[in-house]
Length: 125
Image 1 (tube, rainbow, N blue to C red):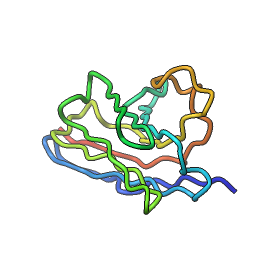
Image 2: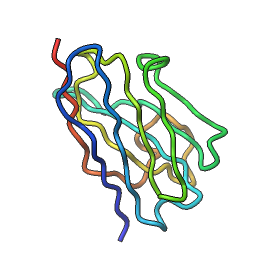
Image 3: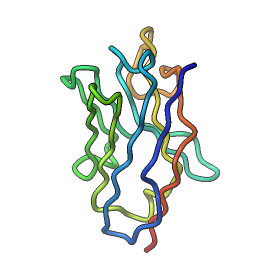
C-alpha cells in the first residue's frame, strides 16, 4: 500500500517558522521526485516546491522563494519543507505528493500520482 503521511503543521504567528515532514512508504519514495502543494479554502491546489530524487533539481513557487526550503533524507524516506517568514497568505492545508514517472511538468497537480492527506498550517497576523 502506498502511503504518504504529512506532519508538523500547526498554528504560528506571522513571521514564525514551521517544518513539515512527509514520511513515505519505501516503494513510493525510491527514485521518485517529490513535491509540496497547498490548498486554502475556496481555492485550487497550488504548487509550492519540488525536488528530484538526487536533489539536483529543485523548483519553488515564486510566492515562497527565499522563505521556504525543500529537502529530503532518502535513507529515512522523508521529505521536508522548512517554512520561514510565514505570512497569513501561507495559511492552507499542505500536501506532499510523489511526482509520476510520466509527469510532464513539475508544477501541475496532475503530474503527481500519490498524495498524502495533508497537514493544516495556520498563520495568524
